Image (cartoon, rainbow, N blue to C red; front, side):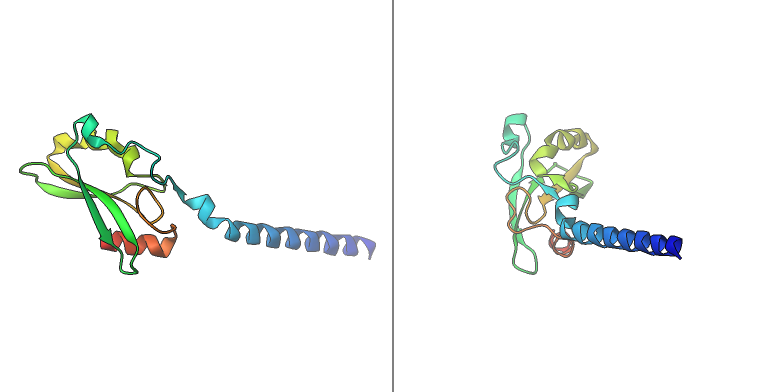
Length: 134
């Protein structure tokens, strides 16, 4: 009987620990997944690297103002829509943009809400809306 009580106590402690871990994980989800770098962090003068970019301002369907760069290429074969990932901002991808130029593509890279010069705070549903707007 005493051994059975010890097992139940252990299970109870484990259940409480799992519950606390779950609450902590859900509460910190955004900080674990999204690592935005807001303006002015980054290199915001692509012209100094010889890149010709156009600032593009647009809105998601919920009214969040977003920012992107369009890098035109004469006689481009296609346009690459670039989703830069969960960390940093578009200005941290300038070296990658330079490497893509020989592919003869226009490039449109944008910052999700909460990144770079884009307004708002990142979350999963919002980033879906930002992607559709781009």
